[in-house]
Image 1 (cartoon, rainbow, N blue to C red):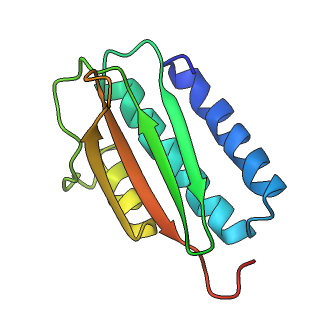
Image 2: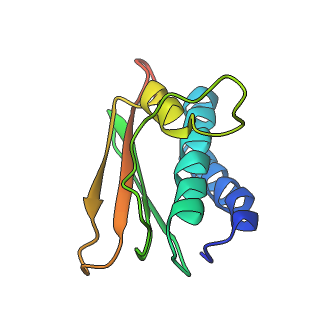
Length: 126
C-alpha cells in the first residue's frame, strides 16, 4: 500500500473484511484493527518508505500481524513515556498492551524493517 497517512483507514478496512471472512470474533477484530492502525501509522511517520506491506497469519492460538517498510527511518521502534499533554507517543504502549508479544526484525531484502505483533485468541474462539 502507499505509505500515506490516508491509507491507514484502508488498511483497517481490509483487515476487518478479511477477519470477518475468517469468522474472527469481534473483540479480536477490534484489537487487531487498533494494533494494525498503530503499526501502519508508525511506518508512515517514522520511515521514508514509498510503500508499506502488511501481512497476517491466523492460527487456532493466535493472530500475527506484521507491517514492513522500505527503511530510511532514523529511529528504532520502542515504547516511551508520553507526557500527559502530548497527542502521540503511546502507540507501541497500546500494541504491547493488546499483544502477547511484539518485536522488530530487518526485512529479508535488507531494506527496511518489519514490526510484528502476536495477539492471543480467546479461549473458546473458533
